[in-house]
Length: 381
Image 1 (cartoon, rainbow, N blue to C red):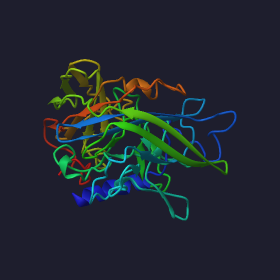
Image 2 (tube, rainbow, N blue to C red):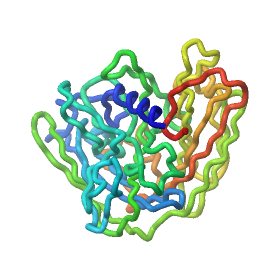
Image 3 (cartoon, helix red, strand yellow):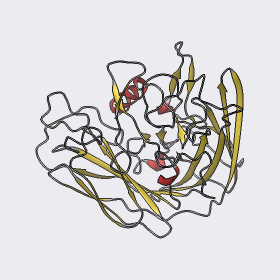
């Protein structure tokens, strides 16, 4: 487990920096807020049903310039709530012993900014959802490891591998592309699409006002922004059952979901633990992360030919690949608030952004394994 987390952390570190506008990394000194392009910070909060194990907090924010993308590439974000909001003691994440006010970010998602390597930013307010810090450099990054306080003992069965990166992939989102790392020419990773939600694994969340405070420096000028929202902690979505998976020999995957009452949309994220394959493997799949969006109960299929990071031309999943799927249910239209379809500077956020999360489900593509990888995503033991 430790080796696998370390390997993923290394990949994330080598990935460099990015912004909420997928496939785009605006420079620090330009493209941000100013008289002609004022940034607009918006916030909604909601409860999170962690598969019945605990109730946490969802932070849904947008911080966009007039072009609809991230207002500034680097910010730091702090969440202030009721004084009775307590951190998770003994957690490795920041704010473990705090009360009321918490820096956002997971210790598993620390990023070094600047050539001197002296400044660390854990997470900031992005164009859609809390995101990693961005910079004027090539390369992209995993979206922040979630949930914050993933080492909360209550989450052992919900996130058995600890914090994970969540981002949208084909077929629900456009194809990704391999991008050069900002820190190493030897590492290329896929670009990604933000899904907006940011989960914090508090043991309990009180009703009341929550405020997101953002600080940043743009064009040499220090600035701040704030946005507030209210939470009714009694509003909790029902338990969401895990997706039912049927893996097919051709490399496709059928996913069946039942949406409980109150859930109007669900995103199912599928991780392939065996991508990318080793060199000279007989299966040259290139899709390691797939997403499906459900508007109602039913069955959808991840096609067999989505390889090459969703652009097609190769098998989606290889024989023997281990697949891990987890569902995130919403009482609002989460997918419609983010890119690529929504670039409004002020998208209409829900009054309360509630989320319910299923246990993970696992399946394997039939057939003899042709590719064996030692690197695994954190969920796998």
